[in-house]
Each structure stands twice: as C-alpha cells, then as structure tokens.
Image (tube, rainbow, N blue to C red):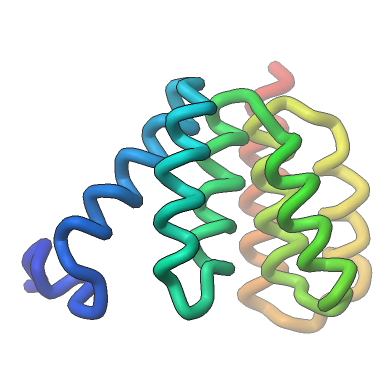
Length: 133
C-alpha cells in the first residue's frame, strides 16, 4: 500500500500542497488566486501538461470551460492526434455543462482504435448523460 509520501516522490510536499491549493481554487471559483498559484507551479515543472489537464478539469468542475478551451485547444493545435487530450477537453466541457463536449467525443469514438481512450470517452459520455437529466 502506498502512503501519501510515496504517491509522488518527485515532487516535494510544498509543490504538492501548492498544486492542491491551485486546483481547489479552480473548483471553488477563486480563479484569480488559483491562477496565480497554478501559474507559479507550472513554472517549476519540466512538463506542465499533466498539471494543465488536471487544472482544466478542475476549472470545468467549477463551471468554467474557457481555460480548457484555451490551454488544451492550443495543445491540440500542436498535437492534433492526441486523443487523450481530446477526451480531457471533452471532460472539462461536460463538467462545465458546455455542449462542446459531444462532437469531440463523437469524433474520438468514430476514429480511435485505442481501447483505453474509447473506454474513457464512453465513460465521459455516460456521465454527461446523467447531467442532462
């Protein structure tokens, strides 16, 4: 069994705490403060992409899909075949109740041969259906 210290051995506790503060700020709509903290965290990361995906989803939970549209959209312009990011973008849209999620998932499900991506896309689609009830 992993304890909290083993979960992310490459990040010191202070960074993990800052990440948590930034993501929670996004969820609870304290966007200016969350943006300041998250931007500082991103500057310390060799590859901020995984954190940006988490941040996009957290902002989606908080009802704001714009960060996901901007940041993940920019990533997809440079990497148009990144199906995982497409699913993450659709997830952020669905959580923010932004209808742009549907065509993204429809395209992924129509073209992807990656079983894990398809399962994730179907899971988001199923969850989004519960939000519309």
